Image (tube, rainbow, N blue to C red; front, side, top):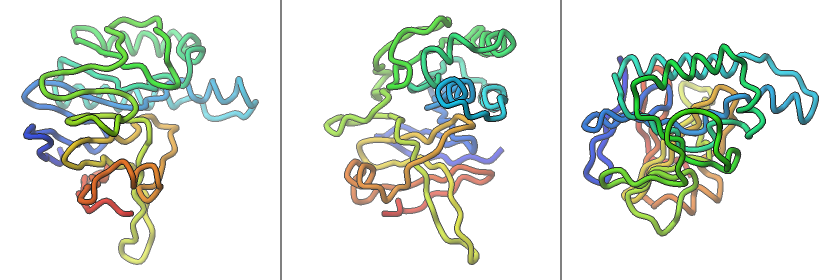
Length: 220
């Protein structure tokens, strides 16, 4: 399969085409911003109807990544559910699907701003996690070193072969890694946005997701 291996704070990590991050030496898969149940939350709050299949699509891609990597540790890096009610309203089919993915794995839910409270699913629930030399949290701490976070849904817009493309991307510098959103119904923040421009160092890189993950200097 296609992937992009890179070094972050002396650790070899693997950017997957889907937007998942794999740590081979730890057999650990990290995903961020699944936003499961977003179509239900949008319909409940605004009355707008979206095709209600994004949860199944997200879980299917996650299942594929777990099968391909054989990961035994899974970290969900916050905003795993679009809100607490969306988690409560998952269909029985989707609940069972999630339980099958969790079976036999150490599953860690990190709290996000959309799902700050405990949810009624198995696994470990924490505000943040330090594993080996890396800190995992939902929103980046500008003063933290060796940190992996999510929240911003970074996207890169580039012109290639005469047309503009936009792809979710990992952002990496010498201090932090910001994950792309993994969920099917998730928008994104362009890398030239002030929040990301100020957060990332001057030599930051962007690893674009897609069939062939590609590394470029972070567009600003």
